[in-house]
Length: 529
Image 1: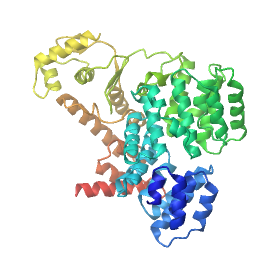
Image 2: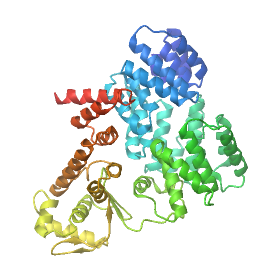
Image 3: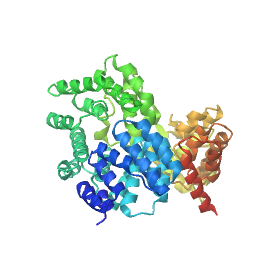
Image 4: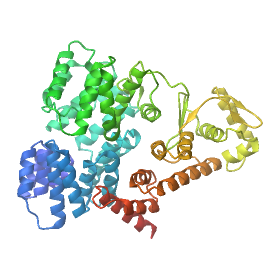
């Protein structure tokens, strides 16, 4: 049995023993880090002086990770970038991706998985990292896909299964008690990190079912020896601040977190969020939530949703559109742990078409109905029956169009004939995108563009509108000398070699994203040869 294979299965003690017997320094260090023996791993890596340049780069990346485990993310980022510049391997790109903010690190992780030709366990580790990163960006469906891939490739690895269970709890359809029945073996796992995560997930599942357990809270907090890194405090505050028996313990933990603040902006933002949720709905909550939101928007979308939802409730306004999209992806039992009951509902239905297809505030509509709504919104002046049928069907079908219009009217939409016009007020992301481009608000346009317009649609009118929107946005971005808009759009159109080559030209040499962008350009260039 290979030591790395044992490590990938979560059998860290066995992996450590075998790696020590085989004198495999990297496998020993990985096992020590997984077992929480960070100082020992760091000492080992500092004394190891490999001759090969690739091994030197990977040693540097692991030293950076050890620094992160000791609460020093700045050193992690610096060493991971140096390692990726020295050698672009799946491991160095993996640590570069983990060390960067999720929107920047995603590309490095994708490049690492693309380059990985190792065993399934190695690919699973990269898929798990992509799952975590997509989740931090608020993309639950993509995160669940990668988490399930990781579990299939390395079914014995407990962290992968815990991540999949968490994502299923937040956005899946499996019954919550069935998910809870998967936890006992993980709650008894030898690794402290696995036991802690399983306890946290137990609290989440019980809270979603209205069964908060102060005993579980005490067990969780006993295992956490780092109150200065309050990653779990926002959820715990929401679960237990109304439980008199748990309030003293939770209050003590909040004070302990405030007494030893971390220099890292993310723990600071999470601590501010937790304090804001603790004081909500009093006026003291507002400045705390406002202080937390900017960092959370770039680092942790789930917690940004909590901050934005409670701020909106304090202001008496509906949840902003980008967060409504994220909230809609949560199952109803999970939404109660993100959205306060006082949050006003949206006044106008909101049609999501960019990268998705959904009308908020209405029962699920047929794909054809969503296409029809999009076409009617795109032509407020109205369309003749013939023009609408040509736009909706590859071969015009007037009878099918009449049936589809009838379905829309049965759902409560007012559609006037001759020409066909939608009279029911509806907001739509693609209309906001068009307006932002028209008024040269590029940052707003890029925030709205989550992917192609109705990506699964083959309706001729939708394809025409989709291509027109993408070309408008592409031209606007390429006209800008600033690489940031280009980087954001290239991530949304990952196969556009022209965008990626332009980005590589504009990124300055010290930019931490250059190694991943260079690897991506090489991959696309090889495909297009």
